[in-house]
Image 1: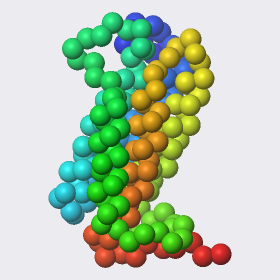
Image 2: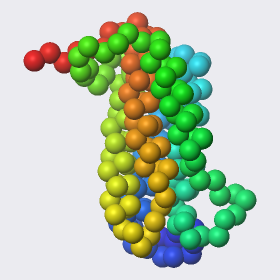
Image 3: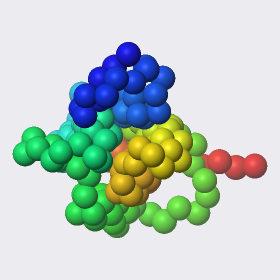
Length: 172
């Protein structure tokens, strides 16, 4: 059993724990990408995303009916807007995609692609959690996670560009 921040005890396979456990896994992958990233601006951006993912995990560990405390920060529309701004800025530095690309390339890009796939898993777990209407989580976490996975894709492409590695196109 684990205790949520509202004091409720839930089993280890509770959808909340599965969701924020997957976010913890995502954060570890982001840490690995940041640890070996040789581009200061990209490394700083990845570390900022780690902060956001930690906030999201705490948000999901705290049911909406929990009394608000000064220490609790929930994911907000401003956070989503920040991700969208980052997506736009990174995309502006890249050539347009003409085909699907395979995950990989340089080491930073490959690690960001792994983080992206873990983020998509967290999104699926979050959707399952949100189906329980008796235990609401709000709308912003799902929007945030969706945009985060898109940002991780764009950052992986940017990492390849910065490392002078060509994205590998999927040709059938």
